View 1 (cartoon, rainbow, N blue to C red):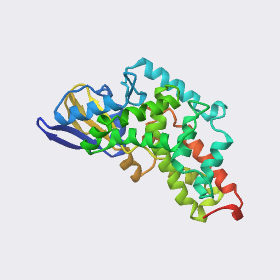
View 2 (view 1 turned 90 degrees about the vertical axis):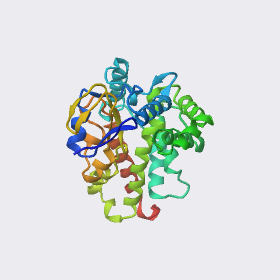
View 3 (view 1 turned 120 degrees about the horizontal axis):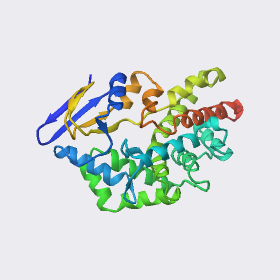
View 4 (view 1 turned 180 degrees about the vertical axis):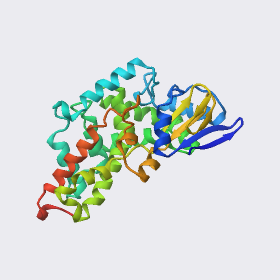
Length: 301
């Protein structure tokens, strides 16, 4: 069951961490990503943060664009097709796989996981993408600006100009592609969590068997900790009644901890499905296969 937190004039929030509830809420037409500043104080502050942070040139990033945004829907579908490994187009190069596999193995001279993963993602949007400590730090700023629970930190990132500069750097590296900004600034952190888990599994030789590849990949697919929806009209949901302006938190990370499943991790079959739902597992598999293909004499455990 969902959990409600309602304090008149202050907050109106519903949280859901059960898979069935998340699916029901994700499909509910009363919940959207319009993110209009309405409802009690904290609701308005959270919505304004999203509107201010996840925006490029005055336009919401695709990950927070509304359900009925036709431009978003077309762009996301085109991106989904482009990132589908079944289409036969190469989605990564030798440098990318070698760098990530080396980072997973802990090979001498291997790059840090963060920039290596960011570069792998960035090259989906710009062939000349080159990650750096600065670009990875910019991704950290963008992610913190969205997810921090410290209002003082959020205000500092905005007022100091760090958020604006970081967002501009990320945008320049992908030649202004809004989906690329989200991918290299927000979504990449989920991929890094997956590679960090992969590095842990690498330390256990029993996982290095080719027969364990699929099991390893399943353990390394991570959902974002949570995604947010806003009720656009009052009504009854699978987690209770909502009012216009109620914020609904879909706690994907908590649901994954109970049982992994692509239906929640990538919101499969939903209007907000992640366009990288096929790409991410394929990249994880390619990196792990390269890592375990290295002779034992060259592996660093």
